[in-house]
Image 1: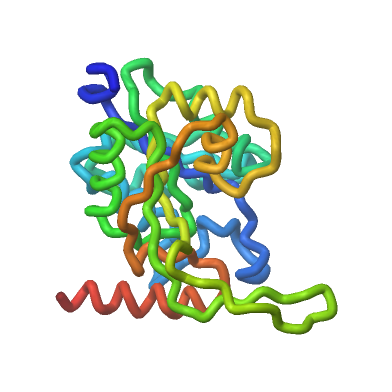
Image 2: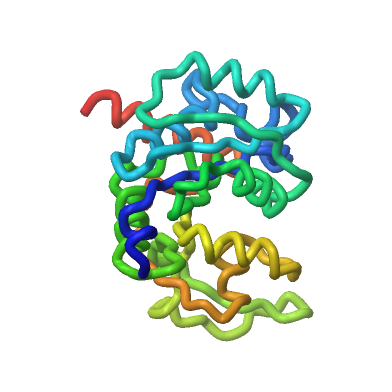
Length: 235
C-alpha cells in the first residue's frame, strides 16, 4: 500500500437515485422519512460523523437534485457534503460520483442510502482496514436463519451450512485506484461494488459489520429503524 493511500483523504459515496418500489409509492427511496427525517440525512450524518471521512458525495435522482441539495444544506455535518446527479443504475451513480472527487482523495467508501443507521465505528473500521493494506473491504454479519435450497418444483433441498456464510453490508471501502479500475473495466451484472472489484481478481477482505446497519427495504424495516432511533435517543 502506497504512502498516498495510507495518508490520503477519504470520500464516501452515497448512490441515492433509486425509487424504492418495495417500500410502496411515494418519494424516492432515499427521501422517505423515518421518524420525521429522510433516510438520506441519517446515512450522510453517520458517514460524516466518522473522523476518518473528509468528503461525502450524494448521487441524487436528477429530477430531485435541487431538493436534495436544499435538504442537505440545512443540516450540520462534520464533513464536506455535495450532491451530483445520479444515473439510471447504482453502478452509474457511483461512477458519476467518482468522477466528481477531488484529486487528493485516495480511499473511497460506497454506502447504501438505505442503510441509514450504520454505526460510526463501522465506517471508521472499514477505512482503517483499507489503510492497513486491503484494496477492498466489506463489513459482514453472520446469518441467523436456517438456510435451505429450493428446487425448481418448489420442494425443499438440503440445509446449507451457515458456518462460512455472511450477509454483506455497507459502507464498502476501496482504494480509489481499484474502484476506478473496476468501474472502467467491469461490465458484467453485479449487485455491489465489491463484486465488481472481485471480477478483476482482487481479493475482498471482510470485517465485522453491525446488526443496526440493516437495509431499509420494506415497510417493516421502517418500523424497525424507528425503534432503533427511539432507543438511541434515550441512551
